[in-house]
Image 1 (cartoon, rainbow, N blue to C red):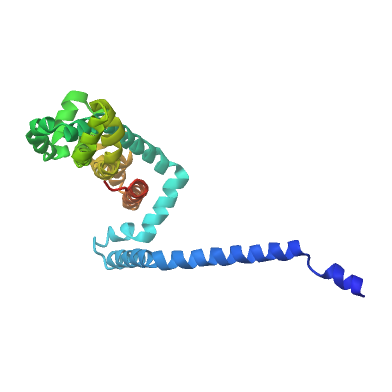
Image 2: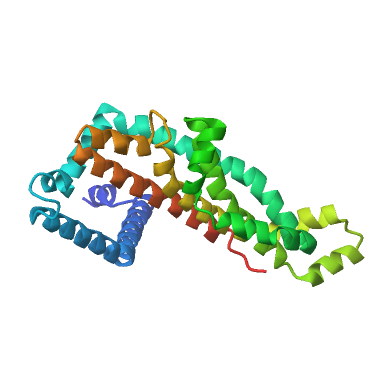
Length: 283
């Protein structure tokens, strides 16, 4: 009898495994509760917006002939349809590619200029008026010039997105480089550091948070300007697809495209905020 009782009793390893499993469940439950408390109001706010949207369309805010196509239900049905047919990916990938090319070329040009302007005060004074003047000109005002120089197509879009992105990158990088304490620079010079060494070892690392802030602004502005920029004769992209859905009277797909643009923009900004938090040291 005692032998049977001993054989049915759990071993020390089994008890330890059960205890670990209970701890994992408790930890997961605690994380879910914390996540709920941290984000519940975000989802409540989103739900309220969807309700207002639905009620406004149900009351015929856009007229009897159009309101039904603009409801959240019709929009998300169209979004599912666009995913199933592949139209969403067909137009999203070119848009992301254009933004990446515009931002990439802007980074290559703007970051070195910003560092030089921030470090050499003479360059800052020489470029201040011109840069402030040019950055105040709306990027859309350059659309006719872009078409004259590059013609219709991707090159004109790349140019406009590049032009949008360089100013926040230059100005924020220059601000970060210019905020470096002169004491650091003097100490480095007394230890025999050259201007090149000071650039690579002090100025650039210290300016990285400001560079990322400028990049975040550049990403947001580029994504906003993308839609009108893609109306310059390209045959794909989310901006082009808005015009296409309008011409086909597919207003549900038009709204689905707008939702997609907003969602991708939100994700891009979230990624940039994560990078800024990762490198958010202060000098």
